[in-house]
Length: 270
Ligand SMILES: C/C(=C\CNc1ncnc2c1ncn2[C@@H]1O[C@H](COP(=O)(O)O)[C@@H](O)[C@H]1O)CO
Image 1 (cartoon, protein in one colour):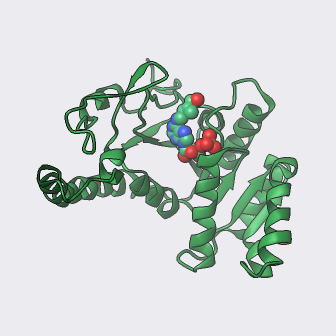
Image 2 (cartoon, rainbow, N blue to C red; image 1 turned 90 degrees about the vertical axis):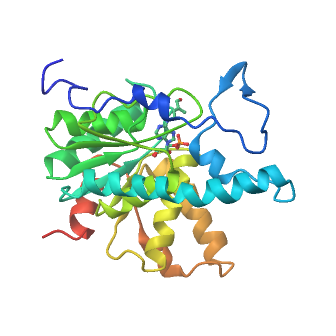
């Protein structure tokens, strides 16, 4: 594969298979969990988060020793992320549905957003997966911008999309989420599901609590996001759960052009 072709610079991800930790804690003795007839991989995140009964002497030791030493692995994942991304200057992270089909309107929206961000001088960061992530990386790649994919280990086969020029593979969601925020100056959210909502609300929490400053959060697609923003206004503000000015943390736009303009207007740039 020649340099400059999609996928030419992406780091290989297939060898990661060897690093999947297949140690079921709660189910010691069981070796696999079946989902839809397929053997499901037990991911590193899952062995960290799974409940273990400390009253069982065998499991208690497992929990105490494994969890303590696990910190080193978490640390090494932070170090690898920091090392790989420390040179990224100006970047925007784009989130969106993993389920969008190539050629669809939402896919084309992602391509357009990625391309315009790239043309505006930003590196583009995504989750590195399919759907809107692939579309956005494609747009950035075609604009000649740095196209970054922060991939995540999942219980099923997961490949980084071919338009990523810098790929990093993470086992822990929370480490990966740190990288999304730390190395970008704005978030753009395309229409998405639970993963996208999680990423959106984490960003809102960080900005609301002033953990990050001057960090625009742009939602693209009034038809899709408008009802959520209306609910926040009519229920969260009305019920006193958020302040009216918290709504100002969100910029709602319709087009890729408006999205990039909002980022350029509101993000910290030299
Ligand atoms: C579901 C399918 C693939 C999942 N692969 C993913 N790879 C990378 N990142 C992902 C993946 N799925 C979710 N994410 C993250 O969440 C957001 C999208 O989630 P949503 O629920 O689809 O909105 C995205 O921004 C990623 O960071 C194949 O069908």
